[in-house]
Length: 389
Image 1: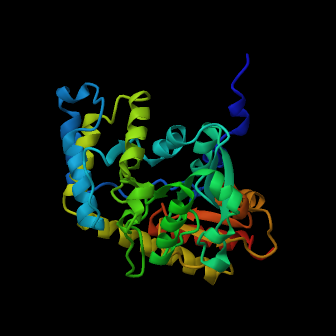
Image 2 (image 1 turned 90 degrees about the vertical axis):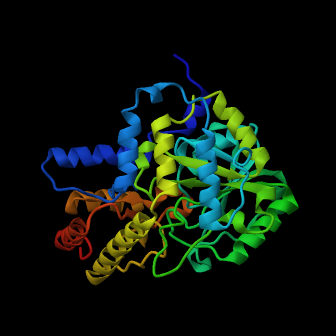
């Protein structure tokens, strides 16, 4: 058999590899604390669960959705106005995604031709680069460095690269570095995109998971943003709906239209009970969002402070549901450290090298276990002696 050459660009995804390692340890009877995949373990609020149950029980909802209902579009536009102060035309500036992952995997097909340049952060969530690769685009990495607060330095992008670029993917609060961008960054980003005619995709999946009393808004709230791009948002982390796969692409009408057309040839729309559940989440009681945020902040405090106390200095995250940690002293290879950590302590983390060249020397830990498990993980790491020998 012969297969597409594009498949030579892809191996087994890092999270699939980690799952296999986890299964091997569990088979040995090891107590594994999985801090690798950002799978929320905080369930949706009761009113959201009730909506899903009720709508899934309605036999009329098992037809093809084909596209977004007007009710869903209206709810998303109202949500953006209420939460971010952004005005959206619900018919032309909103399209749902079957989770942000699906949108990130496909949007380059609507924007970039084979050989076109796409600018992606480094380190970044893997699909930021994998989506453009599927479209046959060339990647240019934009380093996010600790000394610059993990902000992309737009001045570092070579002139010839900027002129050739079709799409730029940006995300703050950032996965995996957990950084937040100030208003000045977005203003510079919009000016840069206008100067070079680049479409901007801002992934805003973590805007509600910002800690220490800080807040975060939307890229689209800045003047000129809708002229140059779109924003992806997700209900996975904010509302505990990860498995339901609910996201939105909002903003520039031309980009939304092209993505909508592409999706109309790829799927039959979001399952109607899931659409109703999304509406319930973004229009209903929002107190659950604060509860979720506080839970992640508490876990962050326990994990970061606990690891620091046992000899692994780890900065407290500013946002997201992750911790971005430099490797302990004497370790240089992230994958090697992650494997040894699992073998010796039963704690599973993601090597930073999985997020791009600049991720080497780090690991990402997801705040997806309860407080007791977080404390167990700290104790297990300490008892393993990996930080001392």
